[in-house]
Length: 457
Ligand code: UD1
Image (tube, helix red, strand yellow):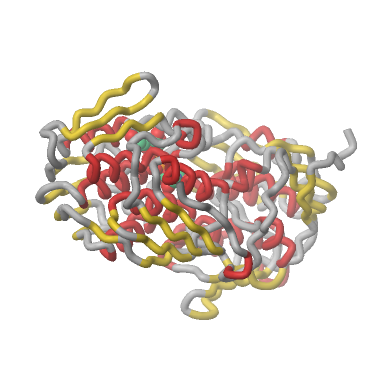
């Protein structure tokens, strides 16, 4: 089995903690501080997970750079190791060698921890002709079925069955997957990525229509192309893939995390602050930038990959204005920023409406935001937020995170609120935010991680 170690001497942008967070940690925020300075965002979690899965397509070693140090990327490394891969990690680099794969059945308890664990079914099936993968976990934000994955794998000629809580798949003709043309019923990000990986090693041409267009799809296609795959159309709704029997490991740098960029933009807005953020690929966040500009924030491009967001009082005038959003697949408003945007809107002037159209159960943060005094009413997938404006700020509270982005919305509310906020269940947030409290402290936030109760009960 491979080793999995972290050496802080080789970190890229900031200090990676050598000691893992204690079990059941909490964040305690003394809110009301203004943020300032610069924050460096990490590599994208949602890019790193499928690219780590894609290393299963490759002979030889893949050297991935800018891999964020998160519980999700560590779990993904552990899934690869459970198959017999060797994984070595040095700061932001992860080197994966899958030449010694001895199993096509990853550890089910790890797959059950994150959605990305299921992605391995595509490369395993394409390279080894069979796979047996438990149903995936991840945030509890809806049913999150895998029917689109199964439909696509069957279109490529696999026999796929659900047995004993696992998806068992093998190549029907006993040889290779066969390229095919099919349409996804919904532009699912994970299904597009999984089927793209499988098609890269199938015999002949594959056309996937109604594909997801997220920037992470382009990043995965970039890695696969580096490894010798032929993928065209990534970033559009149709992918054209010509299969290659063999792909070779390569060096690749994971794109910056656009959801983390959006998170820090919203952190600056909710605290009425001015901060700069890099590296940023502007095209990936146009939707959020337009909404924040409309609310009164000033967004400046300081250099090719650096932006500044100002929401300080002399920039925004009276106060930020509320706005309405509907989440949608890219290039629409990202569902992952919906809970965080709701926290911001609860501090703006006026009534805003948020409609969640991607996941059917992504409102569990509402009851927690209400504990800060936020005025939010939910009806089905619509939330109406009556902004309090500066006349009536949020109040610090004792709250519990139950999913990654919902948990981060509580951290943002805590930063803006008057007084102390204690957020438990912070391990959900650790799945997606590298060095969270260190980055916030660097911006001047008064936030600490603790396992002791500080809030008066
Ligand atoms: C990915 C992201 C997640 C983000 C989401 C939407 C990763 C690891 N996670 O999740 O952060 O919130 O995209 O941008 O990249 N669906 C089906 N059947 C399927 C697959 C999906 O009905 O077989 C539905 C889901 O239930 C959901 C919708 O499609 O309602 C979108 O899901 P999908 O795009 O697949 O999201 P994920 O890949 O799980």
